Length: 362
Image (cartoon, rainbow, N blue to C red; front, side):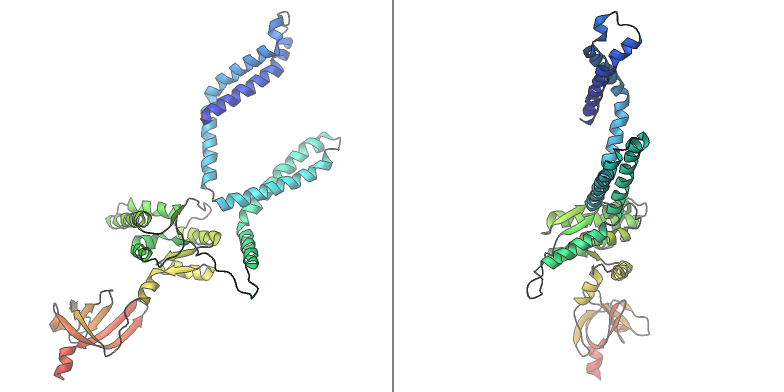
């Protein structure tokens, strides 16, 4: 379809050129003795045919160039394109008012060349200002909206849940699907296109472990999209000036005022430093672990030796490690234990216990 439009443009353009100029060319060639050759309508037909033939040679290059422009515009986030266009329009409007008095000057350079230069320059500057300072304009709009929503008693109205942006690590982890299924996450789930690209790259890795992790992440996304009662959107935009995926996530969260969902400790810290809200799945997992207190009794299966002499190691269903003093003799057995102490570390929770049989013996 695009190629047909290009060919049609060439035909119309060639016909116009032929209508206006081919009769003059015939006069220059001194062929005016043949009256029908000086007809502008004949020139229009000849020009249309010539440019139609030229279009078959150059239309492919023009179509490819137009498609490249189209793909480049599609990749630009809508917010960036909007503010850049607003800046461009304002720049051209200012250039128009500046050029108006210049048209009355009888110097050709000033009245014809300078206005074109001013229009190009101010249009470029307008686009750059709108594009590069979009975040400030967005913050201004949000601030004004919050002021309008302010109630008479200085309370704000209930706002819609913010969008949740998934990062690569939390998708590969897989627990996000179960959390979505329990309806703990409100609002739209945003999956950026650059995160999908990173997942695809991991899934195509030559390393078997990475490949399996990437494929598991894609399976998790497929489950979230097709099986779970949550609204999922794919963010098609990209921030080409930023290379790191984590930095792109932070930028996206600022642009759409969203919340990043991750289990990456470093990303969590960077978000805190930059004022971006973040939900850490590991923090949630630690918060919902069952609380055990010294003196309580548990039934556990001792699985292996501990680091110290005569120690055994068992695990709760959530993965919490229990160190059983004098539990080496009970490896492979299910026994009752008495909790002696609970230690919370940066790596998680560790529970110390001793066999209840020894307590009874004492």
